[in-house]
Length: 524
Ligand code: SF4
Image (cartoon, rainbow, N blue to C red; front, top):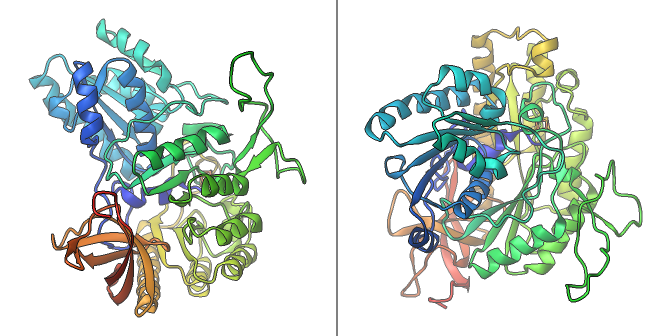
């Protein structure tokens, strides 16, 4: 799926509940790596501060924006106070997320009062959805730019420089920013995101994404492989391939006429490929093919992806995952509801039975694969019986983790036009709490099951609770806390270790390192 809901996995602005695991990143605060920061700041004077809200896709987009602006002479800075230009990359997935951003926009008035030359821009989904309101009612906003218009930022900023307001929220059927090399922001130097596709064609009844991010389009497969290879060269150890519905990724590669003195071939855009990949058509790269290409090209890179759609997830993808050790055994498979009636009204394109068969297939291919999900309580017309079906599905699947929300109506969506938001707030709240309680038990149970096992853990950072401990993730995406010291050496982020799991809490695992598999160069 792709509700962008699950994308909030590492940011905290739009979710109501997540496993209280240690080590999740705070709301995005751009902190460019010192190397990038230093190199750019020597060349340029203008300073940009980019704040990302909501999903991993927005984090990835902010890195594309930073790259476009670097060409225009901007260097990223770590606080809004230092900046000449503040950009808020926004999320519309829920009303609460928009409210948070609107509050932040108001705060910009104080900043502008202290820094008369400051310009403020709104990017992303809210830019697309609320452009008039933003420009007319929020006088502090100078610039409004939608997710497909970031290449026009330099010319829009020129206009803003003359004292005018500037806007471009045009959506595109082609834009994928394929060849733009992102400037990594807020990086831990270990994990990175790579966007493989944009937009969504699914039109789930509750979702605003197709309206704010436009039609689905896939990015050139070879540009994705090249970006992953570059990550390896830059010392990154894990990549998450991002798309609203990765299972519908499709790219056609064709031989271009060879120009004298130039490379042998290039991949270039051709009309979108509709439906499943034609049998035996080797010119079409589907998601399974792409995963395989990245796994082969970057054997030292751990690979994750987000998000799958239950209606499109194929056994071919599962077989590729099972075949490659460097593809993590973790799938985010949003179910949204356990009731067929509700799934139908939500226009999800599958039934409870279909979903459970997909889960069974994951377990057949990879018995050790973790599964997480998104659930929204209290959709239009949801009955107590529907709700009980969701609870029984949580029992049946045994999810490792879930992102759980109350339904909130979004303008323009099918649900807003067709259905009454008729489940009372207190009933929504009560049902959400029951879902959370049930899932919390399941998550704790799943984590307890790992105790005594040995897992490979990629270390990502220092534990929030103890400077003597590091946190990392196992293949199943569970947080694992280990002591920093191993064999009298200090471990560090980026090291891959083998850890025996010694204990669990509601949201994380404790372990002891039994082997250092792959240390970052200076320690190895
Ligand atoms: S329309 Fe459906 S599949 Fe597409 S982003 Fe929204 S919830 Fe995900």
